[in-house]
Length: 104
Image (tube, rainbow, N blue to C red; front, side):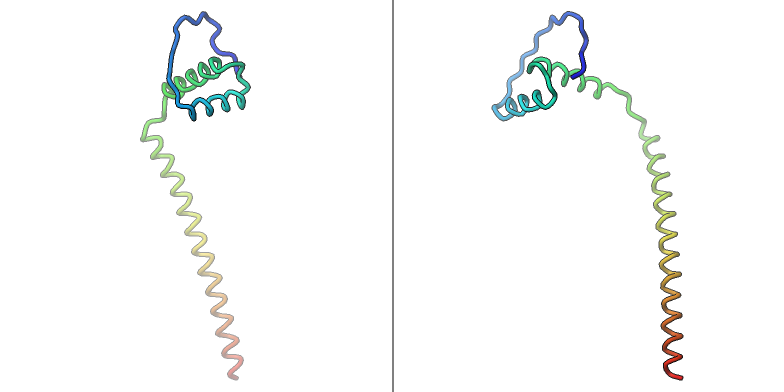
């Protein structure tokens, strides 16, 4: 686990957990390699604070990005349809030619 702020910690925090939540917390501590539940809880809280306060791109940026991606999907689909139509046309022409040759 990365080291957190090394200043003095003077503010206590108390929470109540269910037995299932406590077991999940203990498992998460082990998976993360935390030295204690307190260390893990502190790290999780700080991470949550960072995520909650980080700037998110405005909706306009997200929409513009989606428009670009949608345009790319439309292009790929259009090319796929054209290829399928071309292939289907060739198959139909070949079947017609074989049918005409068979009648002669």
